[in-house]
Length: 396
Image 1: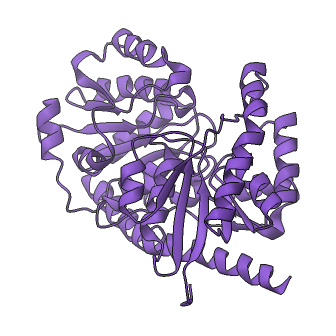
Image 2 (image 1 turned 90 degrees about the horizontal axis):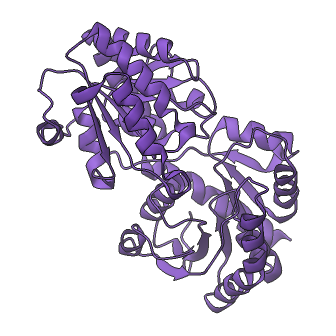
């Protein structure tokens, strides 16, 4: 952004306080924004694991109780949301006025609080859409209508998200801006020896990794069935599932462990839960021979894919959603049909059996990460949106 007498104040409204994709993307955006140009205030529903990191990068954190909205007609969920909505909007409006906020930036399609507060306070509203809603439900229709009314400008995190928004007659105001990562943290020089030692994986054994929260749509069952096929061909192969269960699917991890046991994977597979946290992921990727992304529904983006590519690791990923923006089939990785364990296993075996191909994919992936997904590029693109909405507000 161009120099100003004082920084532009942006209020980020984040619907969760966890370590999911949107949470990490917000943290990284705060890290990348030019503090001389942008003053960041982050509204979170509750304390969480990233609060201290957000504050360490110069942002002010405010806690505003914001009951979550999800793409569901569950009456309990919707009832809590409706009951808490007015007080949350009032709290955000108070922050906007007290802190002289110039722009409200909602960090999810399911964050209605930011748009309502921005509208009532008369400030521009940037709506950052990070979801794909495939089913034409009443909830989707309502959300699209609110975006049309409340968004000064819309950011789509991938082309797939932008296409979904176009169905709601929103193409003119949607910019595609992929998330960025710190390429000095995720890079080919990171070593994976510590992780292999802790897991007891020999240095020369292929290690096939799945890194995700254990949500059923992430396709862990597909990964496990593919792992059995890979192990039948490569008995020395090992497998890693790095990610823990989430409250809404508390029994899922246990069912997947039982499936792995039933498939005879035994000691060849490691379920690490939440043992490996944010700072460990570069080393986990460095320890991996190939990363598998197995989502059975279209992924809005695929953050772990660009992290793996930045670490020069080849990937196998499902050919749907935002993944199609990231993975160049046969060049940075191999695309497979969602839900197809056999096809996924074949792609993994192809990479593991051809070291030259794996190395080429790793190099090409790193170059693409440097070209398209570095943190400064991400931040400058978002800053350009802020310039646009402020120019429009001044012209009005």
